[in-house]
Length: 116
Image (cartoon, rainbow, N blue to C red; front, side, top):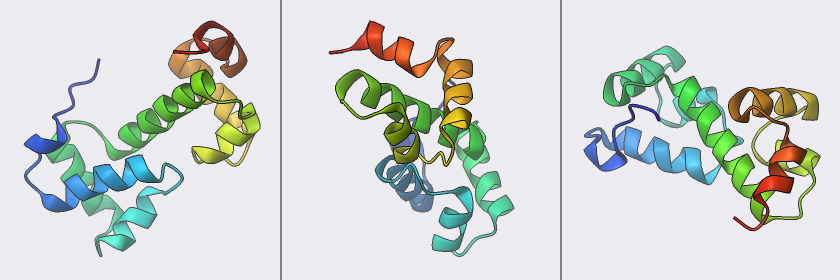
């Protein structure tokens, strides 16, 4: 689906660590990661794009949506709890982002993917 290079193909250890951090805590922001690596937001974004071919913001969004889809299919968490767990303050913003990504709302996704 995406032209993403695998983490093992990424030479920069900071970016491999960033991918792990992104997976471990989807609530973190690009600003959080830039501070953690003592880099500017723009330089971290540039390094990521250069190494992966994707923008860091796009990757963060995709990670959050994939995690949300997993939680919808495998947990009893409410949509509001899932939205918060993947880094959205407002359920309505999460629902719109989810609908754009999966072409259906979170509740509909849950009904058709429970137990996956």
